Length: 318
Ligand code: NAD
Ligand code: UDP
Image (tube, rainbow, N blue to C red; front, side, top):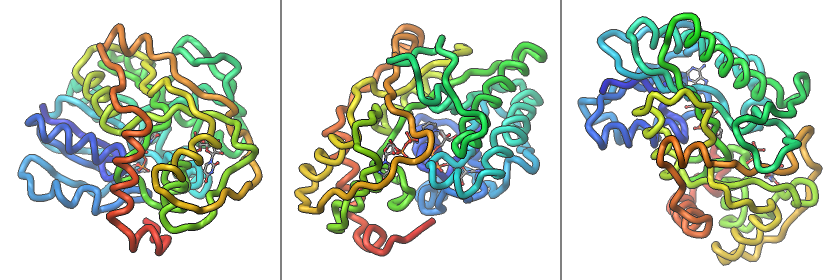
């Protein structure tokens, strides 16, 4: 296959590019490096099956040559990133998604949308299955991300219904692992970098809010399964083991052997209280389920950060 990966220089996108190349596909990575990093894809540059195009998907998107699939991941994803880049985020989800859909349409290619558990907002149903419509504040600060993804889903299905485009949607729940930016502000990267440098762990609110954390290798297997399938979705991809954020802090402190303390900060506006995927659909339709437990996944992630002490200590930003 020849696959376009938008957002391919980011955390998830770079792992997806690597996995596609590993199985023999050709990859065209399109990324504007707004939140991604060149070092994520630097090792792939030597592979003749890999091409990098630096471009903003919201401006225009044309890729010469035949195409079998377009995986659309281009969008800021960390809350501090999309709060810093609100208009860019809305454009990536609207014009960017439309450009990616049109590209897939011109080539008769499969289109895969990387949507998010944030379409469920602060959910009133627990755990969340795909039939739940969500509880999103349409004008709050997080809306630039949540509503962009909800619009992306509607747009993808409208292209399917109107033009017969082969579109599939996955709703990704919190994913972590190597190549997260050390200071991207997400909870796993923040707690690990803080624990490793002996800084206080920034716990928002009382820490009783929960998330369900999926290791990146598991998630990428799910993306590949969906790319190869003709399933429309949406399909939840995530690890259903739920953890409070306070328990995550304790776990990171134990696994790093750090004696850093925990410092409470105000809970961000509209921060969802609980989140856990019902993955029945992914299991039944894709034969997918996560395999890496939280301790194993965190150990691998800690090892990756620990091997980059200068970045961790310097607060180096992308
Ligand atoms: P990331 O910020 O590491 O990667 C996003 C990539 O998209 C970056 O390389 C960035 O430079 C690129 N990008 C952003 N806007 C662009 C534009 N207009 N044109 C071209 N490139 C652009 O984030 P990630 O965690 O790898 O997330 C990837 C995708 O998966 C996103 O669409 C995100 O919404 C989705 N997702 C991720 C998670 C998660 O836990 N990581 C959860 C749910 C959904
Ligand atoms: N969080 C925290 N400290 C941090 C970063 C995040 O306590 O330094 C909390 C945040 O309030 C949320 C959870 O951890 O309840 C997950 O946050 P993240 O930004 O990683 O993902 P999202 O909110 O998008 O699920």
